[in-house]
Amino acid sequence: MSDSREWFTIVEFRAEHAAELVPMWRASFERGVGVVDPHPIEAQTRYLMNDVVPGNEVRVASADGRIVGFVAATRESVSQLYVHLDYQGRGLGTHLLEWAKERSDGSLWLYTFESNAGAQRFYERHGFVVTQRGFEEDWQLRDLRYEWRRAAQV
Image (tube, rainbow, N blue to C red):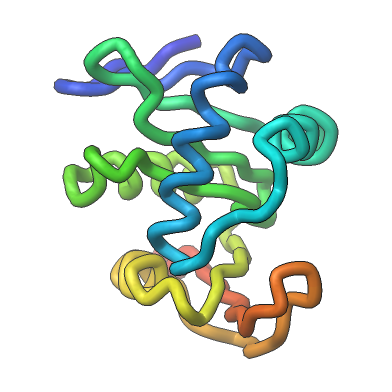
C-alpha cells in the first residue's frame, strides 16, 4: 500500500529499507538532540528490526529516489518519527504525524529529549502537551513525555 503526495511517497516498511533508513534516522537524531550516537550502525539496525518494527506499524517516506523520513507508531504511541535533514520544514513530518493520529484510538503519547527544541516546537504545534518530565538512563538525558487527544466532536 502506498500513499503518494506531490513530492513524496509513503509505503509500508520493508527490510530492504533498513540500510538507507538507519543512517538517515541517525543523522536526524544527532542534529536534533545535539549528540553523537556512540552505537555502531549495525546495533541501531538490529534495534530497528528486533524492537521497533515488531512493535509498531512503520511507514517510510521517499522522494528524489531516497528515503526522506519514517514513522513508527501504534494506536497509542509514536515510537519514532524522523525526517531527513534536507527535507525538514516541508510538511513531511506533519503528514507522518497525521497518519499516526488518524489511526490512533483518539490519543497518542511519545517521548522526546529536552535538548531537542525543534521536536518540542513541532509536537506542540500539533496539539501535544508535556505531561511528564524525566530522565532517560541509556542516553543520560532529560526527556519529556508528550500527549495528544483528539478534540471531542460536537
